[in-house]
Length: 439
Ligand SMILES: *Cc1c(COP(=O)(O)O)cnc(C)c1O
Image: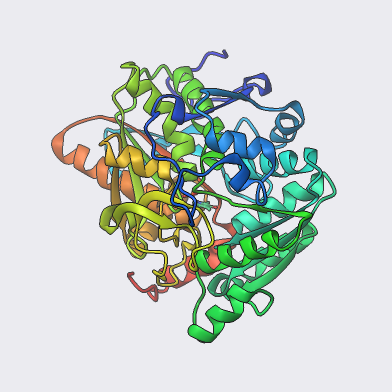
């Protein structure tokens, strides 16, 4: 490993250090409750999932194997943007007047500017090797749709996307991005599916929600034998793919000669980027090598873990998906249209929910004005304008750094900066002009 000095700001990992295996937390937390069949209420089986997903992804969804090999063609695509940067945020520390040592893992350098490509490439690949050359999906803010659009065209597949209405209208550059990568994108609820037509009748003025868009994409895949459905967060296989974030980060932290993390902050919508960064650290905690406090930062507009109940619920709005044991606000909950569209989900990954329930991680809710205040401070110090979603994690770290300054402590804080805010600039303008609603 290259040597670093006290003044180093970046831990540059060589390409060979891109992980060769994904980590699966189910090996270390074997009692995460299984998904249930929505009809029989029995644990879901591989046969139940076969109409929706290719075999390898179903196996990953159900397995308790600790390590899963990353196929070479997937790892070769990862090389387009990985290893992802890991920085010491010295100028940000100075801006906050804290003795905390703050580090951040940045996933915004991917082809679409978010961690979503880490799973999109894997999902497209496993569909392709099963001969499923079409995938359908939903997208909230647009990042997942764009990631899957990028990934599917690598293997000449087709991709049809339902984008939540509020972001379809508010984020036109995201569908341009999806179309540039060759995908088709509809505003959801649409009149193309039974679920969409029913939702439009029930809620004519709806801003849409991830739950609604999921219902449309699931229905479209279920009705087309040549198509698979693909989900950008929440499910175990997605969380598994994102584990490369935390695996890289632990190597990079060691390059800075830091044996411990005191606090780790990640934003949580469906939980995949938080879990990707935090589960390899949670493993260190469980093995007694670390004692990091992991904090999920959710938006006040969709506070599933801080205000929801821990129970079985559907992932979509109309009850088509398996039942997932998770913190949920109820599958009919429609969050306010906050800027962090990627965090507008009523539930939370079952693995993250279980870890929270067992006291292995904490959750806080952050309002969007506080999030953007933190994001602007971070941008001015570090030169990166973070995604609206990522600002929630940065705000969590700011709270901690200020508490540390008041208590005269100097903890090590790691922040997951899940994406770039280049396509969120209208939200920054609204914040800077003092027009942002504090929901
Ligand atoms: C999608 C997205 C999120 C929220 O999804 P998780 O599954 O909770 O990670 C957060 N940040 C960015 C940049 C995203 O694209």
